[in-house]
Image (cartoon, rainbow, N blue to C red; front, side):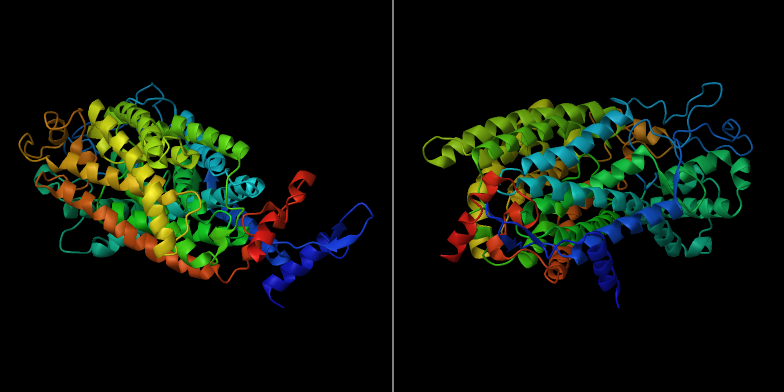
Length: 602
């Protein structure tokens, strides 16, 4: 007897029903109820949650950060255990952090590290609440336009997002650990031609990507050495501090930890899941969604590792490629294989007036929270600019939504489905490095272009995909996420393409970053933001690699996931886009229950 059989038996015993029947009409006739789920599906969800709980119990520590360090005050330059050279970081961490974040809090005398002194726009929790609103409430309401799928839209999205976030918190920490192992393999664990030293001197530092990765690898080696011998941290407190920052750990133990930082990483890993969900909405069952969600988080982390960690691209101001492009193309692969042929033609795949109004409420929620989503990981000096530019782009995309929707309708009437997407396309169209460097008028123009491109895609590209390629997109995720994200990617490349060595001084620790002020609009440490910062066009070059690499990984992963989802039982074609197969529905729903199925069968 297998695990599935055991779970079926236990669930039948616990939730035994009298023959699977319910009261059918006024005379008490008993009719057999058709359900889209089996005991196996429910058992799978329970076992999955129990497995996640077990992992959290076994390997996750809950600590408060930042915390008071248990090491003495940091030694000054040249002092025993202190930095050898005057540099802001021993090496740029491959782990990303929001402004003002450090693994240690202030000293007992109130002394704060340079990271804690960075300007921040608001407290961390404010960002967490707004990003969670964007992920859970905004997407759910924005997808709630279907006339007979309201229960499922809200609840299935919450279900898969809740599981994906839990898994994402663990998975993204595993990706950090995996990258350290990868870097150590590259340098043969410090036994190569160039040995690792506690601090690299100025003449050893070139600023090239290979040299940065080598120093990161040596920092990973230092973390592992301290993990084996904790006393090293008291001898080298300065280096130990930066070892934690570089490798993305909060302590020197082999455990996962819970912080706002890791919670946000889990939420960001859930956004591609929600994008994919929009493309599959109404056509598959919750167990199929769950499978695709887990696969999406896994592949999101792997793509992030390839694009950001291995190639050295930068996409931390909204994730135009690693989030929006990845979610869209993963969804294309999933819906192409997982959706049953003809399901999108179900008459219930249509909106109703009240549901469309609720959908617009979701659009407004996403509109309000988009700046926080884009700005969380932006550099401290440019965080406010990202918020402002995102709002400006959203303003103009709303105008573009109304204009283009009126033009494409033929009668100068607005199309709700068009406006619901194009109004927030501006937030996606500046979700790249562009929002850091853009002037206000540039953000307005790009937002308008993004809104117009989204509207055009909704009216023309979507029809082409459905008719020619059999790619059905329930909510228009390709129009809202893929097309504007491509604009953001291209605009970002243009913005960094003119950064050269004109105003770049010779590398000399901290001075290397501050000499960039005439090239960049902010006093940012350029070399501590971009992994490729030699000033010879390498920044734009590696930004350019992001889109094709992400598209290939996402599409391949989506096709594999969609193929696997086909083997999980889902609703029949006649029962797609209907709550009745999964929910107990009220009488007013049951009165028109058979409308869609009769139309499908006629």
